[in-house]
Length: 123
Image (cartoon, rainbow, N blue to C red; front, side, top):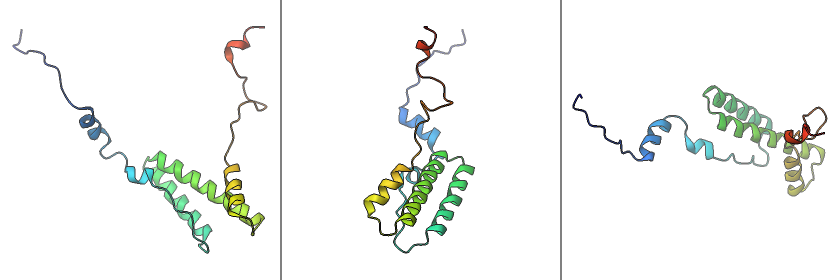
């Protein structure tokens, strides 16, 4: 009617994604790992620096970075507690204590809803 013939748009998926994610996230920061503090380093100052970095990341809507920093802070605090309990502990014992500090699932605990909802109605 208007002399316009429909034609399929042909673009690579990477071209579209580059435009969307170009300024969103600095992937080198998201995938970077935090080095373990060296012996004699001031752990309290390091934890405070990590907390400020976490808050800045959250303000900038970089939630993956903020969550990674939060997990690292929790791990370092668990290591600090393990070392405070036994200053002569082996490295493996300290790492085991840090791994044990991870939160567990609340499924099956008192006050939680039951498991399979399909079975609940059949009595």
